[in-house]
Image 1: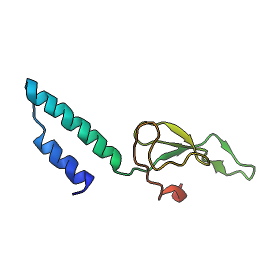
Image 2 (image 1 turned 180 degrees about the vertical axis):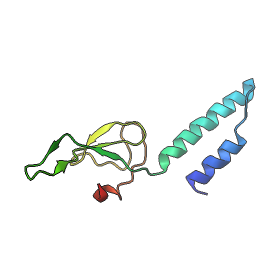
Image 3 (image 1 turned 45 degrees about the horizontal axis):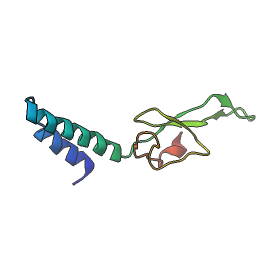
Image 4 (image 1 turned 60 degrees about the horizontal axis):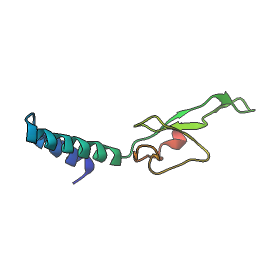
Length: 95
C-alpha cells in the first residue's frame, strides 16, 4: 500500500463527531499529515539577483510544505529540517 492509498483509506474511516470518536479523528488527522509529508514534493526556487553573465541566480529553495528557505548550494536535504517534508530533487535541473 502506498502513502496515498493509506491516506485515502484513513479519510474513509475517520469518525465524524462525538467525544471518544473525536480523539480518534484527531489521531487519524495527525497520521494523514505525517503520511502526506512522506510523499516527495518538489521545492520551489527563489532568487534575488543576476550572475555576472546576466543569468538569473536561483540561490534559495523553499520547502513545499512549510516554506522554510535554504541555500541551494549548501543545504540540499532529503527531508526538510524544519517540518520533515520529503523533498523531490529530480526536477531541480529543469528550473
